[in-house]
Length: 281
Image (cartoon, rainbow, N blue to C red):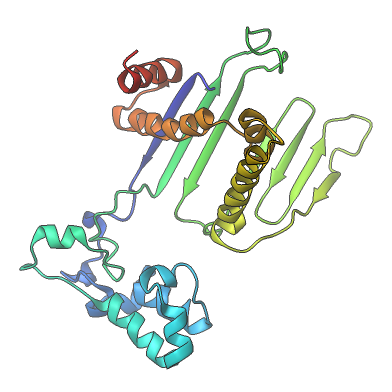
């Protein structure tokens, strides 16, 4: 587990004070005078860039869950009309606040939204030197390291992941399509890389959602059939224990606490307090 966690980031663009003046008091893209010039128009995103080009999966199916059935039975034009009706649903000054907050307004002006997700954020995780630590017999030479995660809304690689892992003997670079491995061996061409093309899968998170469910199912099946213990099945098929999965999620809350408090969080202290609050110990 890391020793220190920090997070910096803010909603940079999508705040009401940055709303274009040309948009006036509009709260929905379909009634906005600035819509044709807006890069973030829901009309352009859902209809022109996606639906009109044949997309029926995410995020179209989030707005109209049965959009595929509607299109198949009633036609493309009817499906578009249903999607447009949902997107154009609006509210005004007379709409009670609790009604506004209780509904999903997919055609809502991005600058009028109550969404508080950060446009840009950087998380830094720091690990201490673990070499020779008690309980670390499996990885006796595990040294200190730092991991930095950067998530940005403003990029050409929307919903894509890319990264670099630098070690003492080499480096890996990866994106959604390939993995490139470089070695620091002085007897080899430093610019040469081994390229790996992983198999691709469809579905949510580029097949990640289905992969998690498949691996979990395999773990459960192995335990039920008596092939593996719970601990062995978790290690082989899931890749982590239940506690480790929980800790990875809890770490996100620790990072947010660091951001809001403008501080660096000591993970061990933070986790100990959480355990005490949850378990009373």
